[in-house]
Image (spheres, rainbow, N blue to C red):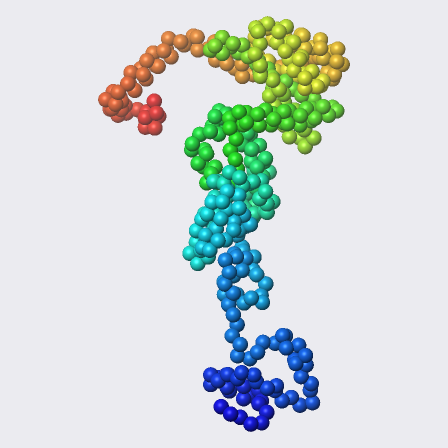
Length: 389
């Protein structure tokens, strides 16, 4: 198409719409203005020049993006440890390759390889400080009842190991519980970032937790004017071993009562002097000086224990009443003795009742005949009581 005279902007637009192109369009006619684009011809594209698509194997460059745009960083952190090679990704630590087509595959296989399969990948290098909003259940001691609160948490391997050791202690689980297949599978689903320790390590963690809690409790008991009330009991196991348990009761500054086991140990015998020396050694270990009362059962050797401890507190000059009213008898033990003495007079009757109940419950047929007899004599007994007997 030939044209004379200057070409205006509308002419160029019409040519582009009709599919015509110009090799080198002359400058547009502008009135009373100087065309500064001639001085910097690289600032503007030529009209009709097609934009070239950039294709690259680098995952940092998005396919179809123009070359003059800034590369977009991948969203997944796994690309920091993989190199894109065509449609596959190569691990920078162990040189293992995985399918990584941006149109077909995602990065879950890459993440699983880094966290579970790659032995050279340093898992401690991950940034685990990012917090996540979760709903946590309120504790009973908070006084708010049941419910949950929205809070931010982050993964802490050390805190998880402490919580695991506390669970072993509170629930009285064996140390080998952490090596069970069911527990390992459960933890791999709940939190795959946590490396479950072995039973020797968890035993060491339990001991460290014990020493930490002991240090905290000792700091509380060492405060001035902190009195404690002791409760002790001795018994012999089926292995013919004698044990002593010493428990301390005290009230803190918030007027909350606490109960803590101070010592649980073997003793040679049940003599009063032996038990008194064991309690004295425990008090010195915990740096307890203010003992208000000692609750024991009515065994005869406990009189020697109380006399021994009274002399110690008088030497320490710590008891507010100079050792008076220190001895407190165990009410449960007294009640048990009363019941045992009462049952001796009715021992034969109780034995006959037990034998009758044992006979009726020996078979379903006897139980049915017993229920029939109840209906015949028209006894008004709850059927639940009959079924549970």
